[in-house]
Structures are given as C-alpha cells and as structure tokens.
Image (cartoon, rainbow, N blue to C red; front, side, top):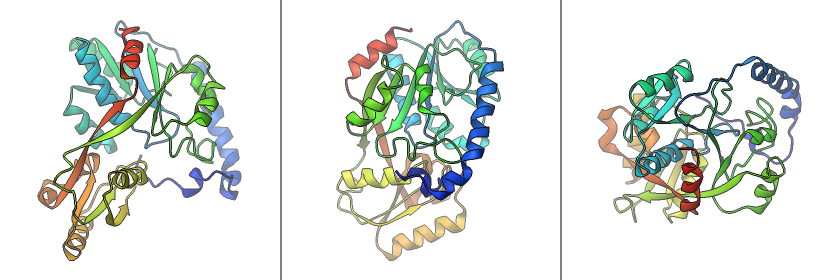
Length: 309
C-alpha cells in the first residue's frame, strides 16, 4: 500500500476527521466480521508461523521475518517465506530473497502448497493475520512501541486493521522498542496467555557514515522510526525527508536528492528497503543502513517456536 499515513491517526486524542470517518470504520469492521464467518479455514501438514500486525505498516515485520528464518535454519528446519502477491511490495520480496526462498501467489494457501512441493517444512507467513482461510500454528503480532496503536481506532478513522480484541487469536506479541508496562497491561487485558518479547535494531556497517554530514530519506511505513534510530546512534542529520510507504523514486527526485547532498557536502542515507527500490545507476551516490533484529530473551522465544515444529 503506497500512501502517507494521516497525522491524525497517531494522535492520542480523537480528531474531528476520525469522528467523521467512524461510520465507514463500522462498515469495514462489519464486512471483515462477515468474511471471517463465511471463510473456511484450511490446515496444512507443515507448521505455519504467521508474522502479522494490527497497526497498519511500520511495525518491523520484514526484519523480524528474516530473523525468524535464521532461527529456524539453526533449528535444522527448511523454512520458506510465504506472501500474498502484490506488485508494490517488491522491495520487501527482494530483501527476503537475500535470506531465503519466497513463495507468493494471489492466494496465500496456494503459495504454501508451492512451498511444500519444494520441500519447505516451515512456512513463515508474512502479513497473513487477517487471512482467515489459513490455520496458523503460531501467530506473532508486531508493534512499534513509539506508535503503539495510534488513536486506537480502526481504518479509516485510525491506523488499526482490527480492534485489539483480535489479540485473542495471537500467541506472541513482539514490541520493537523499550519496555512499556502500560502497553503490556493493555495487551494482557485482551489475552492473558500471550507471551511478550521486545526487540531492538542493531545497525551494521556504521563506520562509513560516522562523523559525516547526513541527509536521511525514507519511504517506509514510519520514516520517523528510521530518523529516530539515527539519533539513537548519535548521527546528526542535515535534513530528514519523508516519502510515502513503498514509494517508487523517480529519476528527478533522486537527482534532486543527490544535488542537495553535494551542495551540503553530505552523505545521502536511506533504509535497505528504500535502496532496493532505487535504480542501480544511482547506487553509488546513496548509502543505506543494514539492520538486524535483536530479540531480548531470545532463548525463551526459541523455546516457543520449538513447541510447534
């Protein structure tokens, strides 16, 4: 989905726009409920681990999927990524392909079947929590501690794909950020049996940009999180430029960014996802951060994974 999230989605107070859009949110929820009721759930002979979200975009699903793949390989499994086919998400697919095989289809169930034909014995279902046609052996929901649930309303009044009551279907919650007891309390009010794990981003290959002037740009779900990560690394930016999620950069936009960096004698820095969407002719003028997910209490998380494989 290529769009800028409205600012009122992430405000603590309910805005006039949210109230105006609320009737549409009710219709969307009603249609989702009806779809759930009439959908027949299919179970597969291999474990399906779903990495999903309730807050729309920017929750760190892709890097967590990649970390989970590495964990499963270390457990002597043969995992594969499974996704619904979307043209606009090619950046995420390319990122995953650097780690392991990706199977995609207009129907996720068909993609799982293809994976099984290729001897995959664990399916990592990326963004399938709202797909009620697939039985999940383990459902993991990702949040970012900074955005949490925004204004707490569902689309289009707010950023939620479902109410938090959907956590009743989940087994594990991943929170990227600092420990937050208020968030934990809210989560447990919907599902006391949930396991909560926290993650942090570990940045690799930082030496090339240390003590340099930086112009940062990003077209991801929450560009602010990328800029905040730079601040955590004590990297000062000359400018921070936001684009829409999954933005397809034009040559003119990239030329303007490069000219701006030269004018300021600065390095152009972006995310790895963004870098994969940039034509190769511009690669030499742009650098990107390579990040890895670090799971706190990782051994405990691995034990939860072992239960279903």
